[in-house]
Length: 463
Image (cartoon, rainbow, N blue to C red):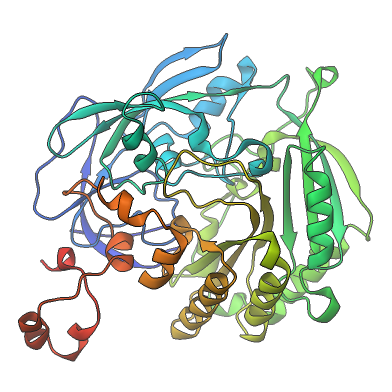
């Protein structure tokens, strides 16, 4: 057994690991359950399997084929987005959708159906996955595509790695002329200002996202800076513009776990004030390399150590436009009143482009992501309150960022849960899945285990 953690560093659980090297290998047959695990960049427990076995896919890192004329790449599931970018960008191709870090695997991008700054134009990553191979614990292998095993295709995209192991995938990239972004930074004074400028930007800008000052109060609730941009046209080809960082571990680094007192209301408030006012209230335009535009945090190796040994909880929700203003205002105010400032808060808009994944998180509306240092019960209560507000607003919470979602909330957020459950591999499970789909223990076991056993638990968690 090894003690491992997710990117949020909470929870820490014990599990076995089994590295995979060849996509033709059979799955192991240890006791307990299995779960694919790439680079562990999920924030909660969806990438953990307490008491079971993690199938480490980082060794499945081979590129199989790349057609530079069409932008179609086939690779093993452990290939990172960083590897694809280093292959494709110099040849005039780019990822069709990318999250805020390039240090995730293709298999992880499929399992979480990741989204990015262009959801209003491009939808989710799963829309560009042409086909993949799914290896089940019964040793069966099936190629899944929109026109081949389409039900398995829909269940696996956004399926949190629970339908089996994706061994390889074929992805359609998008053409670009050069690696540069024409970026604008636009200040907005409050949440209404964000919604107005974000919706207005969707027609002319492929990429939009906003940093938000989570501690602003009164009429300034939700103020921040909107970043919007497009890939630069051909006249910018060949400019000697440098990236801020080239690969994993190059750039700044957090050398140690920071003490808990470093992140407090005073320090976060001072940082937010300085960050917001550096614009002097005026829009700013610039030409930048795609690296700092899409992946600013990748320049800081081990940035999750800023939150200390106890880690942090990220809360990311999406709420429909009809309820977005009131719900997000209450969420921001509730977190500010709770004395637990979010060091990094991001607002984006989601479009109405449907994902092929049954369990995909994005849906039309406004999404807010907040990072809370783990202060124990106080933090958990706050996140649960925000979860309740999201549910009441008709929204949803992102499983890849979650560590506290209730079974009731999960059922409300993902109405195809029961249909999806029919495609689970019987040998695959995760700490997240057992938490949001508990099975009440038989009475005799409850009696033997004492009062704590009256809480819903998963039979799979008992060893």
